[in-house]
Amino acid sequence: MNNFNSQHTLNLLELFYNDLPPMVPVEVEDRMGQVLKSARKNEADLQELEQIAIFFGRYLWPFWRSFYDLIGEHHKNLGEGFFVDKLENNLKSKYRDYKHSGKTFSDIKKGRGIEDFSYEERRLLNEFLVEVGGDIKKFTKQSIYSTSDKKYRKNIEKYRKILKEVDKTLEKLRKMAEENEKDCPSLSEEIISKVQYFENSLCRFAPELDYREVFGAEEHFCNRKKEKQIFNR
Image (tube, rainbow, N blue to C red):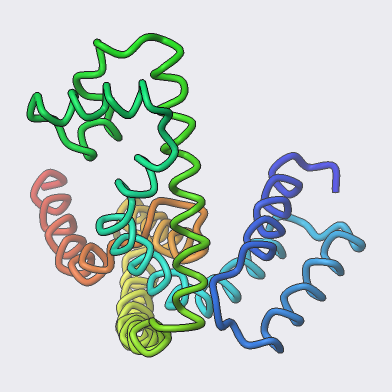
């Protein structure tokens, strides 16, 4: 596996495997581990690795979406408390003054209005914010196995239903690309590229999947075809 892209893709897949969301069935986790082990041993090429990513990425997507929904809720409700607990007295006092000036925890996460903090204090604040992200993730995992399991499972089912609709739309887009391959090859390439982008989003190889964009893609490309027809007259 000398190809850089293949090696990079396999490394990412192994990172994802070692950080699976809660309650993934043991048989799926075991199968994924076996497939990745075989891929490394047999030096799988990029196309094979992408197929592996799509297969497992689709299955895991509802788990990840449900997990990150809960992480977001806990971060919103508990993140600042976790953060303040990490501050030493002097830095805690300066953060209190920061809040009194009208700033918020959201502001400090975005680096807004931090001019009154020294370089070292800013470094510590950033370090603590990163730690809080990890702490919230651990807390969320623990909560799923105790108090939030019903909500987590319910959201998994919700995203599975959404995924079914996403799959239907992607199939329509593939058909549209095939139908336009001869008469409008540039449009066909656009559609194929967008389908690949959506698939990569499911696999976490691209920004988080915006399924509203997926559901609007068919109309978008119908309009793109009309535009191309007008300009090509």
